[in-house]
Image (cartoon, rainbow, N blue to C red; front, side, top):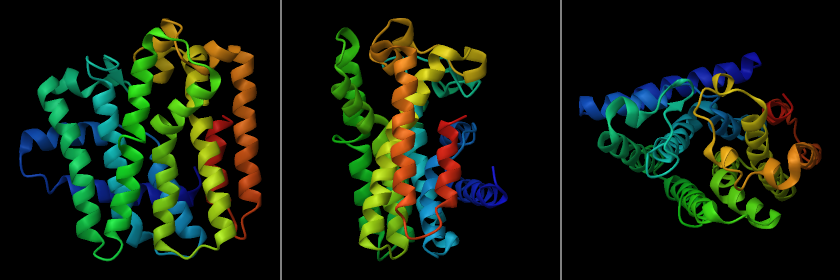
Length: 283
Protein backbone atom coordinates (compact mmCIF):
# COMPACT_ATOMS: atom_id res chain seq x y z
CA UNK A 1 0.00 0.00 0.00
CA UNK A 2 1.35 3.41 -0.96
CA UNK A 3 2.26 5.88 1.82
CA UNK A 4 -0.70 8.02 0.78
CA UNK A 5 -3.30 5.28 1.16
CA UNK A 6 -1.57 3.98 4.27
CA UNK A 7 -1.84 7.44 5.80
CA UNK A 8 -5.54 7.62 4.99
CA UNK A 9 -6.07 4.19 6.48
CA UNK A 10 -4.36 5.28 9.70
CA UNK A 11 -6.61 8.33 9.82
CA UNK A 12 -9.67 6.13 9.32
CA UNK A 13 -8.54 3.87 12.17
CA UNK A 14 -8.12 6.87 14.45
CA UNK A 15 -11.57 8.17 13.55
CA UNK A 16 -13.13 4.77 14.21
CA UNK A 17 -11.42 4.66 17.61
CA UNK A 18 -12.78 8.10 18.46
CA UNK A 19 -16.32 7.18 17.47
CA UNK A 20 -16.26 3.86 19.33
CA UNK A 21 -14.95 5.53 22.49
CA UNK A 22 -18.26 7.38 22.73
CA UNK A 23 -20.25 4.16 23.27
CA UNK A 24 -21.33 4.30 26.91
CA UNK A 25 -22.06 0.65 27.68
CA UNK A 26 -18.75 -1.21 28.12
CA UNK A 27 -20.12 -4.62 27.09
CA UNK A 28 -21.64 -3.25 23.91
CA UNK A 29 -18.55 -1.19 23.18
CA UNK A 30 -16.31 -4.25 23.54
CA UNK A 31 -18.38 -6.22 21.03
CA UNK A 32 -18.44 -3.34 18.56
CA UNK A 33 -14.71 -2.70 18.90
CA UNK A 34 -13.95 -6.42 18.49
CA UNK A 35 -15.36 -6.55 14.97
CA UNK A 36 -14.47 -3.05 13.83
CA UNK A 37 -10.85 -3.58 14.82
CA UNK A 38 -10.62 -7.16 13.57
CA UNK A 39 -8.67 -6.04 10.53
CA UNK A 40 -9.60 -5.70 6.90
CA UNK A 41 -8.28 -3.46 4.15
CA UNK A 42 -10.77 -0.61 4.78
CA UNK A 43 -11.40 -0.58 1.03
CA UNK A 44 -14.74 1.21 1.23
CA UNK A 45 -13.43 4.14 3.30
CA UNK A 46 -10.38 4.33 1.03
CA UNK A 47 -12.59 4.46 -2.05
CA UNK A 48 -14.50 7.36 -0.53
CA UNK A 49 -11.33 9.23 0.45
CA UNK A 50 -9.77 8.58 -2.96
CA UNK A 51 -12.57 10.46 -4.67
CA UNK A 52 -12.21 13.34 -2.21
CA UNK A 53 -8.46 13.56 -2.80
CA UNK A 54 -8.67 13.25 -6.59
CA UNK A 55 -10.87 16.34 -6.76
CA UNK A 56 -8.88 18.38 -4.25
CA UNK A 57 -11.20 17.93 -1.29
CA UNK A 58 -10.18 17.93 2.36
CA UNK A 59 -9.59 14.40 3.63
CA UNK A 60 -10.21 15.34 7.27
CA UNK A 61 -13.70 16.57 6.42
CA UNK A 62 -14.65 13.19 4.96
CA UNK A 63 -13.25 10.96 7.71
CA UNK A 64 -16.48 10.70 9.74
CA UNK A 65 -18.32 9.64 6.57
CA UNK A 66 -15.63 7.04 5.91
CA UNK A 67 -16.04 5.73 9.47
CA UNK A 68 -19.82 5.55 9.10
CA UNK A 69 -19.39 3.55 5.91
CA UNK A 70 -17.09 1.10 7.70
CA UNK A 71 -19.59 0.83 10.55
CA UNK A 72 -22.27 -0.37 8.13
CA UNK A 73 -19.89 -2.79 6.44
CA UNK A 74 -18.85 -4.24 9.81
CA UNK A 75 -22.46 -4.61 10.95
CA UNK A 76 -23.17 -6.62 7.82
CA UNK A 77 -20.28 -8.98 8.55
CA UNK A 78 -21.43 -9.57 12.14
CA UNK A 79 -24.95 -10.41 11.01
CA UNK A 80 -23.81 -12.48 8.01
CA UNK A 81 -21.80 -14.70 10.35
CA UNK A 82 -24.74 -15.47 12.67
CA UNK A 83 -26.09 -19.05 12.91
CA UNK A 84 -29.33 -17.99 11.21
CA UNK A 85 -27.33 -16.66 8.25
CA UNK A 86 -23.96 -18.11 7.15
CA UNK A 87 -23.22 -19.72 10.55
CA UNK A 88 -19.49 -18.97 10.42
CA UNK A 89 -17.03 -19.61 13.24
CA UNK A 90 -14.14 -17.48 11.94
CA UNK A 91 -13.80 -14.02 10.47
CA UNK A 92 -10.38 -12.64 9.51
CA UNK A 93 -8.71 -15.44 11.43
CA UNK A 94 -10.55 -14.73 14.70
CA UNK A 95 -13.72 -16.18 16.25
CA UNK A 96 -16.78 -14.46 14.85
CA UNK A 97 -18.55 -11.94 17.05
CA UNK A 98 -21.29 -14.32 18.18
CA UNK A 99 -18.69 -16.94 19.08
CA UNK A 100 -16.86 -14.40 21.20
CA UNK A 101 -19.80 -12.57 22.80
CA UNK A 102 -22.87 -14.73 22.22
CA UNK A 103 -25.62 -14.33 19.66
CA UNK A 104 -27.67 -11.72 21.52
CA UNK A 105 -24.83 -9.25 22.02
CA UNK A 106 -23.55 -9.87 18.49
CA UNK A 107 -26.94 -8.95 17.06
CA UNK A 108 -27.08 -5.84 19.21
CA UNK A 109 -23.52 -4.84 18.29
CA UNK A 110 -24.49 -5.04 14.64
CA UNK A 111 -27.66 -3.07 15.31
CA UNK A 112 -25.65 -0.40 17.13
CA UNK A 113 -23.08 -0.06 14.35
CA UNK A 114 -25.79 0.32 11.72
CA UNK A 115 -27.75 2.87 13.72
CA UNK A 116 -24.74 4.81 14.96
CA UNK A 117 -23.51 5.18 11.38
CA UNK A 118 -26.48 7.39 10.59
CA UNK A 119 -26.07 9.29 13.84
CA UNK A 120 -22.47 10.08 12.86
CA UNK A 121 -23.52 11.37 9.44
CA UNK A 122 -26.36 13.46 10.85
CA UNK A 123 -24.24 14.92 13.63
CA UNK A 124 -21.06 15.62 11.67
CA UNK A 125 -22.64 17.04 8.52
CA UNK A 126 -25.45 19.53 9.21
CA UNK A 127 -25.60 20.51 5.54
CA UNK A 128 -24.84 17.33 3.61
CA UNK A 129 -25.85 14.82 6.28
CA UNK A 130 -29.23 14.05 4.71
CA UNK A 131 -27.62 13.31 1.35
CA UNK A 132 -24.99 11.08 3.01
CA UNK A 133 -27.67 9.22 4.95
CA UNK A 134 -29.79 8.69 1.86
CA UNK A 135 -26.93 7.24 -0.18
CA UNK A 136 -25.79 4.94 2.60
CA UNK A 137 -29.27 3.85 3.67
CA UNK A 138 -30.36 3.03 0.13
CA UNK A 139 -27.17 1.06 -0.47
CA UNK A 140 -27.59 -0.90 2.77
CA UNK A 141 -31.34 -1.41 2.67
CA UNK A 142 -34.06 -3.41 0.96
CA UNK A 143 -32.97 -2.58 -2.59
CA UNK A 144 -29.27 -2.83 -1.76
CA UNK A 145 -27.20 -4.99 0.55
CA UNK A 146 -30.10 -6.48 2.55
CA UNK A 147 -32.07 -7.19 -0.60
CA UNK A 148 -29.05 -8.91 -2.10
CA UNK A 149 -28.65 -11.03 1.02
CA UNK A 150 -32.28 -12.14 0.77
CA UNK A 151 -31.75 -13.03 -2.87
CA UNK A 152 -28.75 -15.08 -1.74
CA UNK A 153 -30.91 -16.90 0.82
CA UNK A 154 -33.66 -17.46 -1.75
CA UNK A 155 -31.11 -19.16 -3.98
CA UNK A 156 -30.06 -21.78 -1.43
CA UNK A 157 -32.10 -24.43 -3.22
CA UNK A 158 -31.92 -23.01 -6.73
CA UNK A 159 -29.14 -22.54 -9.27
CA UNK A 160 -29.34 -18.97 -10.51
CA UNK A 161 -28.70 -17.88 -14.06
CA UNK A 162 -25.72 -15.60 -14.59
CA UNK A 163 -27.79 -12.40 -14.76
CA UNK A 164 -29.53 -13.21 -11.48
CA UNK A 165 -26.20 -14.03 -9.86
CA UNK A 166 -24.81 -10.69 -11.01
CA UNK A 167 -27.89 -8.85 -9.78
CA UNK A 168 -27.57 -10.54 -6.38
CA UNK A 169 -23.97 -9.46 -5.93
CA UNK A 170 -24.48 -6.00 -7.39
CA UNK A 171 -26.84 -5.50 -4.45
CA UNK A 172 -25.18 -7.62 -1.75
CA UNK A 173 -21.60 -6.49 -2.35
CA UNK A 174 -21.60 -3.82 -5.02
CA UNK A 175 -24.12 -1.40 -3.54
CA UNK A 176 -21.94 -0.41 -0.59
CA UNK A 177 -18.92 -0.01 -2.85
CA UNK A 178 -20.91 2.23 -5.17
CA UNK A 179 -22.09 4.17 -2.11
CA UNK A 180 -18.47 4.81 -1.14
CA UNK A 181 -17.78 6.49 -4.47
CA UNK A 182 -21.06 8.42 -4.40
CA UNK A 183 -20.54 9.65 -0.83
CA UNK A 184 -17.04 10.84 -1.70
CA UNK A 185 -18.60 12.92 -4.45
CA UNK A 186 -20.60 14.90 -1.89
CA UNK A 187 -17.42 16.52 -0.58
CA UNK A 188 -16.11 17.83 -3.90
CA UNK A 189 -17.22 19.20 -7.27
CA UNK A 190 -17.00 16.60 -10.03
CA UNK A 191 -17.63 17.21 -13.75
CA UNK A 192 -20.69 15.36 -15.06
CA UNK A 193 -18.65 13.19 -17.41
CA UNK A 194 -16.43 12.15 -14.53
CA UNK A 195 -19.47 11.31 -12.42
CA UNK A 196 -20.55 8.82 -15.09
CA UNK A 197 -17.08 7.30 -15.30
CA UNK A 198 -16.85 6.98 -11.52
CA UNK A 199 -20.23 5.23 -11.42
CA UNK A 200 -19.00 2.84 -14.12
CA UNK A 201 -15.82 2.20 -12.16
CA UNK A 202 -17.65 1.47 -8.92
CA UNK A 203 -20.07 -0.93 -10.63
CA UNK A 204 -17.25 -2.87 -12.28
CA UNK A 205 -15.09 -2.87 -9.16
CA UNK A 206 -17.98 -4.05 -6.99
CA UNK A 207 -18.83 -7.01 -9.20
CA UNK A 208 -15.17 -7.82 -9.75
CA UNK A 209 -14.59 -7.78 -6.00
CA UNK A 210 -17.22 -10.48 -5.51
CA UNK A 211 -15.95 -12.60 -8.39
CA UNK A 212 -12.46 -12.38 -6.88
CA UNK A 213 -13.87 -13.45 -3.51
CA UNK A 214 -15.59 -16.46 -5.08
CA UNK A 215 -12.36 -17.44 -6.84
CA UNK A 216 -10.39 -17.15 -3.60
CA UNK A 217 -12.89 -19.42 -1.85
CA UNK A 218 -12.02 -22.29 -4.21
CA UNK A 219 -8.30 -21.61 -4.69
CA UNK A 220 -7.12 -20.69 -1.19
CA UNK A 221 -7.14 -22.56 2.10
CA UNK A 222 -9.33 -21.51 5.01
CA UNK A 223 -6.12 -20.55 6.86
CA UNK A 224 -5.16 -18.20 4.02
CA UNK A 225 -8.66 -16.73 3.95
CA UNK A 226 -8.95 -16.44 7.72
CA UNK A 227 -12.54 -17.63 7.70
CA UNK A 228 -14.71 -20.71 7.79
CA UNK A 229 -14.98 -22.59 4.50
CA UNK A 230 -17.68 -20.96 2.36
CA UNK A 231 -20.77 -23.13 2.56
CA UNK A 232 -21.99 -21.95 -0.83
CA UNK A 233 -18.82 -23.34 -2.37
CA UNK A 234 -19.00 -26.58 -0.40
CA UNK A 235 -22.60 -27.18 -1.42
CA UNK A 236 -22.05 -26.01 -5.01
CA UNK A 237 -24.55 -23.19 -4.90
CA UNK A 238 -24.56 -19.77 -6.50
CA UNK A 239 -20.97 -18.74 -7.11
CA UNK A 240 -19.19 -17.62 -10.25
CA UNK A 241 -16.80 -20.62 -10.34
CA UNK A 242 -19.74 -23.01 -9.95
CA UNK A 243 -21.72 -21.38 -12.73
CA UNK A 244 -18.87 -20.52 -15.10
CA UNK A 245 -16.12 -22.89 -14.00
CA UNK A 246 -12.89 -21.58 -12.48
CA UNK A 247 -11.46 -20.49 -15.84
CA UNK A 248 -14.72 -18.80 -16.75
CA UNK A 249 -14.80 -16.97 -13.43
CA UNK A 250 -11.24 -15.77 -13.95
CA UNK A 251 -12.22 -14.50 -17.40
CA UNK A 252 -15.28 -12.75 -15.93
CA UNK A 253 -13.01 -11.06 -13.39
CA UNK A 254 -10.73 -9.82 -16.16
CA UNK A 255 -13.73 -8.34 -17.96
CA UNK A 256 -14.70 -6.32 -14.88
CA UNK A 257 -11.12 -5.20 -14.32
CA UNK A 258 -10.96 -4.00 -17.92
CA UNK A 259 -14.23 -2.10 -17.51
CA UNK A 260 -12.92 -0.44 -14.37
CA UNK A 261 -9.64 0.52 -16.05
CA UNK A 262 -11.51 1.97 -19.02
CA UNK A 263 -13.62 4.08 -16.67
CA UNK A 264 -10.54 5.41 -14.87
CA UNK A 265 -8.92 6.33 -18.18
CA UNK A 266 -11.96 8.47 -19.01
CA UNK A 267 -11.51 10.68 -15.94
CA UNK A 268 -10.20 14.23 -16.26
CA UNK A 269 -8.04 13.89 -13.12
CA UNK A 270 -5.22 11.63 -11.97
CA UNK A 271 -6.91 8.42 -10.81
CA UNK A 272 -3.85 6.90 -9.14
CA UNK A 273 -5.59 6.22 -5.78
CA UNK A 274 -8.44 4.30 -7.40
CA UNK A 275 -6.01 2.50 -9.70
CA UNK A 276 -4.06 1.33 -6.66
CA UNK A 277 -7.23 0.02 -5.02
CA UNK A 278 -8.27 -1.70 -8.25
CA UNK A 279 -4.97 -3.60 -8.12
CA UNK A 280 -6.33 -5.76 -5.28
CA UNK A 281 -8.40 -7.57 -7.92
CA UNK A 282 -5.25 -8.45 -9.84
CA UNK A 283 -3.33 -9.95 -6.90
